[in-house]
Length: 223
Image (cartoon, rainbow, N blue to C red):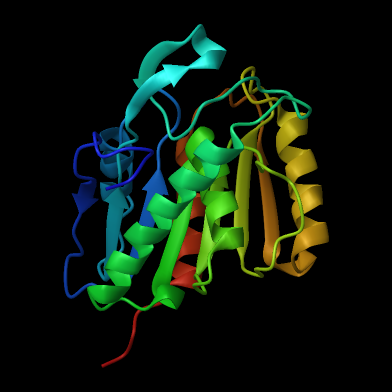
């Protein structure tokens, strides 16, 4: 299970069209579920790749007046200097790492697993990828930020995408995250793409860029 408790349902899964030799684990944003992203990936599916879109558990969220909603961890604010739910972030990250470990046990090596997410899910995917002991294929980070900013031991390929009209997670937050990432890992491995006029959402052009990144990081294995 993913999330901060055992209340979250099983992930939405888009199975590989043939034998799965790679996997994408993608985390949705605050208040959402994995179903919409599973549908999005079904539209750009790559035959040998399995797509796993877990659902966050429901919990009160401080940012939204303690209303209960699907959330990977609590959010106190969306400014770079806001307090952070350190224990919740770390707990959620451990659950995502357990999901990665499960796929490894299923026969997909970690270097053939790509982690990603949108907004809060993107933040969790960045943090998890930079703290896991597993070597991953890369990260797709959409309209998000890097939580618990400090030194990270991992190096990997990162595709970060952000709309320049995002009213919720400001574009400058995304661009500053990209610059921070360049100080943590090899700058040549970081790609930051902006999308003119895009609010806090995804767009077809972005999904094409994601597909190209997945194809590059998770190529087919020749028989």
